[in-house]
Length: 254
Image (cartoon, rainbow, N blue to C red; front, side, top):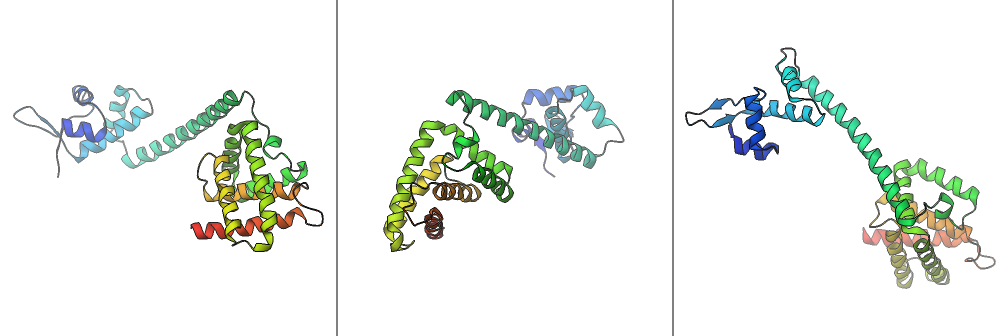
């Protein structure tokens, strides 16, 4: 069985040598061996005890109370680990909630005003917005939809408008290229530019779920924007074409 010096244990556990000396002095963590030269050596039992000490410290237990808990004959390591896990998961959830609040505040400060959901789906009829978001949440979950929408809010109205204009221009080009088929090189070039704009919408390369969501949102916008579709050609037709061309693009990229 390996023995660990104070310095080695310090590096392994991420605590200072001075802290280990303090734990020894308090009888909180005694070395398994003290050599004739006065060196402290720690074994596996001490490593497990130090792990428990650090877990309890993370949960803000005082050192004296930790010592009492660990020295209790009824102390059960497995039960303690389960309790630590539950407590840390609860703390993680609280921290994630705080991070989300901070992110929303930063977006508000950056753009002076928070964009409303209607601004994110400008050009789409209100009834379609509600139906679309409900279906999207059902398919991809609240977390994905909230993440996408927060990223869209962070862009601000001006950049959102510029990206939407560029998307509309690409849609017009794709409309003209529809007879060529979804695998046409010119069509694929437009789709590639369109994907770059999608990446900008969410601040980087999207996860699969976010990509699907944004593509559906763009298709819905196209379908709801009568100005793009010429007389006699439903917006849904170009939306389906974009979906097919995007699918071809993604298969080639994958």
